[in-house]
Every structure is written in C-alpha cells, then in structure tokens.
Image (cartoon, rainbow, N blue to C red):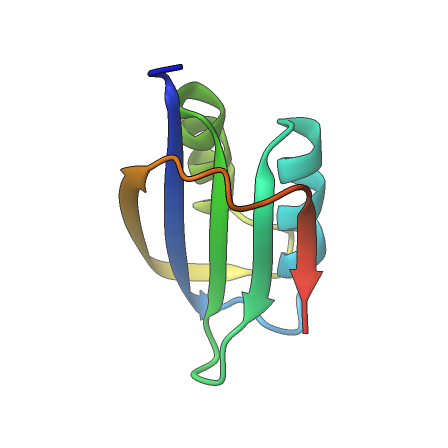
Length: 93
C-alpha cells in the first residue's frame, strides 16, 4: 500500500506537564495510528507513528495545536517509509 508512511515528530515548547502525551495518545487512537509518544530529557515530546499519509498529516496538524495549557514553539517532522514496526500506539515512560 503506497499511501502508508512513518512520521517522527519532535515537539518543542511547553509540552511536558500539560497532558501532551495523553492528548497525542487520544489523537493517534482516533486516527488508528500505531507507534508511541514519550517525553524526552530535553523537555520536548517525541512521537513516532505509522499509518496512512492522510491520517499522519491530520495528527501532525493537531500536534501543532496541542492540548489546552501547551505552548508549542517549534515542530520538527521527518517523513520516512512505512516499516510496520508497531502493533499499537503507546505512551512510553
């Protein structure tokens, strides 16, 4: 299926302590994406997700807004080929 892709996102700003991971989890589940989200030691949030390109683009659009209380200053998004590495979407700690 050529419309499948992988997306890695690094979200910068006030994104820890504002339920950003829970927000991302809900978005990913609604869009049927697979992958994970975690806080990084630098204070950013990292997301790895796989699914259809359209669904990944929809998630990216929502990640740019985030949950109430978040303040996103920058988003780094890297697209790559779908690898089928994930069986679900998880919050990593």
